[in-house]
Image (cartoon, rainbow, N blue to C red; front, side, top):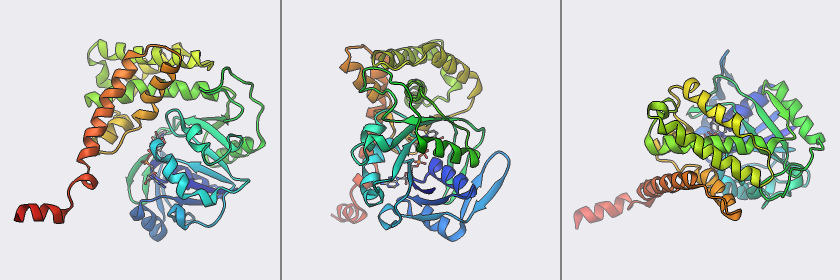
Length: 337
Ligand code: NAD
């Protein structure tokens, strides 16, 4: 299978590296020129639990420079970057190209559907972690799972009920390919439940940690911390169930309580984004839950409050970003005058 990875940061580089190592033909498509140049020059340095190696069989370029139409395009940008990224890769979306998203949050299939019919979209969720350590250098420790399904076969927010899974040849091929690359994947008829459960979990921890600067463990330092996390999860799961998605409240709340102990020093990605002054994915996590709740008249006050608070931090940091600051020549002119 000829694979393109659109958005080759932490996750995209990890998946691309492992798939290339398993013998697939992989092209990494990204806009980080330093990262692309370093991969082309020296290969991708990939650290996993058992080994560190350099993968030299990856092609890497900007989306607009690629020419080969892939069989599978795996999108791993941040959720708010989907439209821009697919827009620049539009030429690569042939009539037989399938797109797979394992991004966090909700609304990704809808965003991708503007470019590819839902019949050719695979959707899923992964607990595999990855860190971007620098140009051409990523790490992943601790392992995890991938659950995925066919977007058109599975229930999601816009569908009134859960439709049965009918399997898909392309889906089976992708699961098989992932297995050969050491990525533990399953085709899951309940993929939308898994997606909502992860969104619920992230709406609680990512947002709480982003606002407070706490690690996951520190949320447990006052009793109302875990109480608020559990309340957010309950709100999100109520919305999922109202949308006909059989998300499991007990399971997701148990995950929250377990994480307080097992993810001791972990800073969720949303907190990492805030600390690095990058835009967060709050809009496709808490924001998407609130929008789905409003459509169904379900009150979700905790989720909504966290959405507003993180959006305000995002907005303030966005206004402070260098691209929106006066240019150095403007500043110099101001100093001189
Ligand atoms: P990342 O920021 O490391 O990678 C995103 C990449 O997309 C960057 O390299 C960026 O340069 C690239 N990009 C941005 N705009 C682009 C464009 N127009 N065209 C092409 N490339 C573009 O993010 P990540 O941590 O790899 O996360 C990707 C997705 O996976 C997110 O939705 C995240 O929530 C999800 N996820 C991450 C992890 C994790 O541990 N990192 C785990 C599970 C899910």
